[in-house]
Amino acid sequence: QQQQQQQQQQQQKFSTSTSSSPPSKLSSTRAQNVLSLLPSYLLDARAITKYHPVNSPEGALQLSVAENQLSELPILDLDDAKHAKVAALMEDENDGAKRQGGERVTVETAGEGMTLVDVLSQLARSTVPRPSSSTGLPSAQSQTEVHVFEKEMIYYQPTQGVPGVRNAMAEYLQNLLVTPHRLATEGNGGTTENDGARCVAMDPENIILGAGCNAVLENLCMCLVEPGEAVMIPTPYYAAFEFDLVARAGCHIVPVNTFQHHPETPPQNTSTLAVTSSSTSHHNQPIPISSYYPNRSSLDQAYERSLAETSRPPRVLLLSHPNNPLGICYPPEVVKECIDWCREKEVHLISDEIYAGSVYRAERGVDSDGQGATFVSAMALAANHDNHAISSSDAGLGLGPYIHLVYALSKDFALSGLRVRVAYTENPEILVPMQKLNDLCQISSQTQLLVERMLRASVLTADGDGDASPPKKFVDVYLKSNQANIRSRCDKLQQCLDEVDIPHLPADSGLFVWMDFREFLPTDPVIDDATGEETLESKERRERQLYLSLMKEFGLLFTPGMSMRNERAGFFRCVFTAASEEEFELGLERIRVFVEKERRG
Image (tube, rainbow, N blue to C red; front, side, top):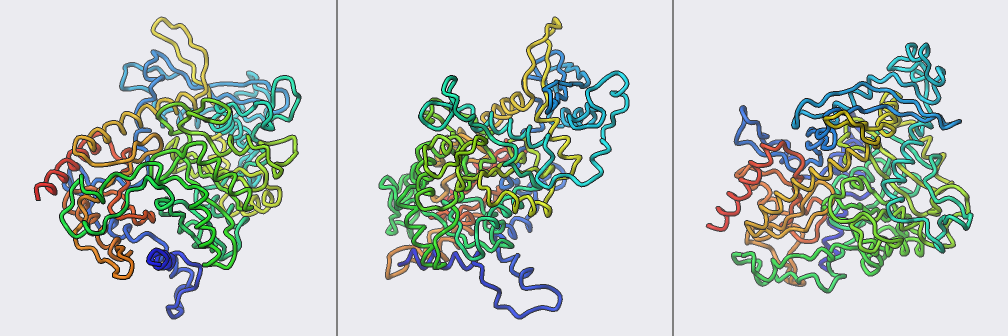
């Protein structure tokens, strides 16, 4: 009963009901409701003085925005080579002819190598024509007539993205999400060398490119969900999902709480909440990683809650995989269980795999079922299913109408400023509506050209003797370098947390570490007499006090867990890539100072 009351209170922040405030002549109630959907911690964060090495050296270090400043480091394989050349490589759609060009960039010394910005600048200057360009295949004459900005780019483009970019994106996503997991095996609807079955591959015609993560996800949900119907999201989840899905699409968010559905979850011992806590007290036993996994029991409970709150079944289960804010991947069996459950219940599954290229530990695929892998895409697992709902079409992965993907270049490539988001669906009823909705968030032609060049680019390197190495795809070279940089940075943070005995999840992907700071919560909880549980208001109040102390007294700006609907107070997300190396090292020192001072009392 107490949990239901707390859940109802949470829903007030992202319900689809209209505001009760009187109408204004200067703005609509929709405009007024927008602010209520923003996480409250953002107001505190915006008011604080941020760190600057000269102007505000005592200011708060920004470790809460999911950005990757490690993209500014030299790309490792290019940094090690004596000479490196990134060539814009385009393939003609009709005859498969290759055309390439590019300018040689000499790497003088290690540490001054080619960065992502250098590569993008070089590709933006390239005059290699598109396959669809009227100049045709390059010749000595035509090559001089090609400009950086092609004449076709000044006119309207296909709303879902130009064919060349969608083809390049389909190939990239196929290699990233599907191919590593041996999708094509006998008996699973895939292709073998001799059976002549349909080819299992992402179909470019099912790709929609749009400007921005939130816009494309919003459009997808608008095509799947009626206003007021439920979208279920396992907790904790990316706080902005509430704004993205409620502000205009009018979805009703139902958190999927998982702790009580795993017997290994340590109970919350309320008898020790009001005394000085320590890292060894019972209620501070670390939460095992498996406690965060959605399963049938937790999904069934959220399904019933959706029925109770909306009088209708939920329409969507939204997974963040790899997970933001946990910094982990769901095991393949967990994702497969969610896929099976969704198909049985006829609930749409949207897998947000925006960090799929930022998995930096262990193997990406071991066998056809993904056993032993750190990350297996829902696309690979869903296409592996021999399910009656799967389409018999010769094109695509055979996902059926209930499985969908969203992805973007903003995290794996740190290109949030380019606003490139991807949706992939094999549901024929929503393809055209999504293309039309994309009129409102179409990517510019110039950006699409740059993205196409990046996805098609090859890296040519030579050693000190001038011997050339075989060409590699630039995206593969960059992701490998980026993963190594993320892993190194994460190792430093986790080593620091281990040294000061702060529990945390063992991160393997994304840009985050999920930290357990319950030890330092204020010790004045409010316990409901009827249930013996701490009230939601008490949890939020105590965590906010700790959040403000970390930010104002110690200059550490983390994301508080209650803003992400975590089930227990005192957890924080640290974005360890959001700072420069100097700022990151300062952040580690501030963590040590905070822990030492708080424990000393």
